[in-house]
Image 1 (cartoon, helix red, strand yellow):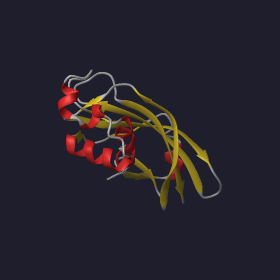
Image 2 (image 1 turned 90 degrees about the vertical axis):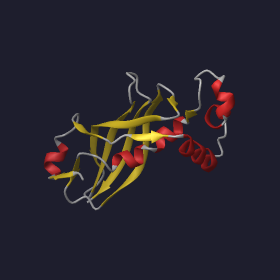
Image 3 (image 1 turned 135 degrees about the vertical axis):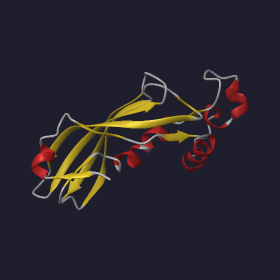
Image 4 (image 1 turned 45 degrees about the horizontal axis):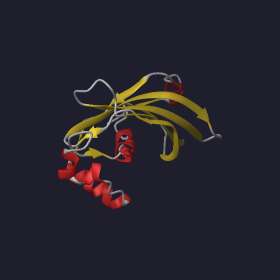
Length: 152
């Protein structure tokens, strides 16, 4: 559950930590379901036998599967401004996939409030930089700037 802070205090949090999420396991069932939804059945994701002889020694999660988790990660933000009635996905800025996510791995996001921009009298555009970590690895899976438009 986030800590609700005044809008004035929230605006001063640019550059600050906004929490680290719980771990999510990337198992083969999740990978297969994502492949079915996106129709991306590349063998490195879904062919367990062939992937054993591939470059990673096992299947890996789709980069866009990792990216899609930003939605659920955002619900675990440490701080939320008081009076925010709703927030909508406004898109992404820079996105980089730095490491593959092997099947069976656990990932989580470390979030930083990168910027806040007034978008009218009752709206605020927030950029959160997500660093998606893979448990036990130094190099992250993904770094992405996610934009959320908050309405008050």
